[in-house]
Image 1: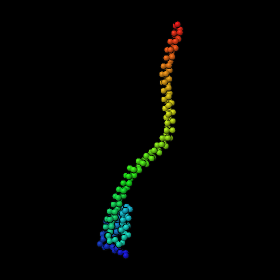
Image 2: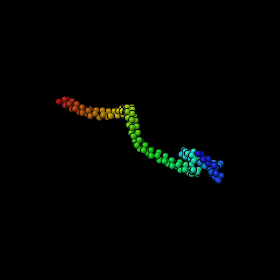
Image 3: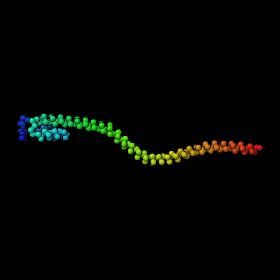
Image 4: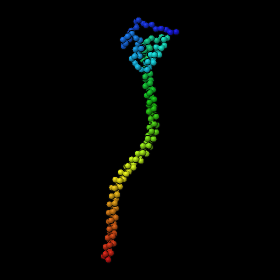
Length: 156
């Protein structure tokens, strides 16, 4: 049974529209929110509904507000759980794999470069100091012993 709606001659024109249109369809034009569109289309597709258009529009607005709040809260809870639970697991796995690969390459390459530069500089400085110190000690001891033996032989 289809009930045809007749136009009400005492109905006011919607303040935002330029023609005598249904306010519910005008909301379709104003808002692109899917929740509003779905709710308005659901109410329009039910011709046996005894709810008038004003209540339908209010209900669709309330439904869209409820859906937006519900979806934002559910997305917030989902992201909060994902960030707190999955992010540390992901980071630990990623960092362990990445660091093992990166450090193996970097140690092989950078350590060899670093050691070659460091050792060449360090060894030149260290060995010159070491040689000069040991050589001076050795020469002083050797010369003192040698000179004492030599002089004792000469004087005897």
